[in-house]
Image (cartoon, rainbow, N blue to C red):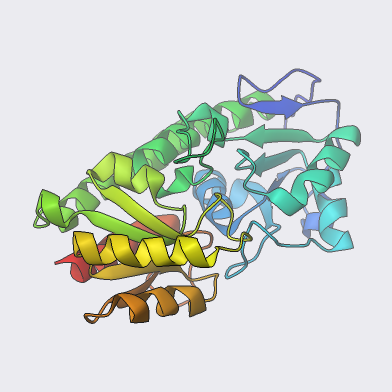
Length: 303
């Protein structure tokens, strides 16, 4: 197998420095396969659908964990350092993994960040800060698939990674059409979103929704809202007639439930999948499933 490792920057989307060895830490007994580390379960699923059995993929942040505050184990740190390729979201999503990724670069790992490659948007009121939640737009993820396929082709010329990436990108474009169909019955005046934190910006942009408020501002699920912020959100929900607050499967719903109770009128608190794939049986075990499940829950809550 031909694996080319260089110190070049990976396109315009990543940092890639030095040579690296195969990832025995990823549990791959076949050292002829590329060893890839993905930071999140969503990215792991994206990569896995492209590489199939022709590469070993390890996921740092497990299903159900919040990527904003996950702490990796020592073994995972070693896995990232020894990988042929580390695929990250970037755009400050993996806040607590920054030192790990910087260390991996120092050890010669290739770090590919997909977020900057797919046309990121600024988060509302973020003073120029990027919204990291690119995976909630299937068309952006179709583009990300192509970026990953191109980098895999650079590392290993023995597999037609670009064809693999194109096939999965086609599935993502198909899911986009499915989501459009699910949301089609919603009138424009009903496409109003209140979320637990700033997670649905890409979804809103792609499908014509307005985000009228968030429970936890600041772009990270780690922030703490003030009493004044909560009171203002309650007022907005009442004034706009918003029937639901959408919360993350990885986060507590306590604050959202408090806002819903204050707003009154039977406000629903609806769990969706944003920072992580879902557990088996959730309907969100894959990226494709997650996008469809979220659309169905949003459409049902706002109908």
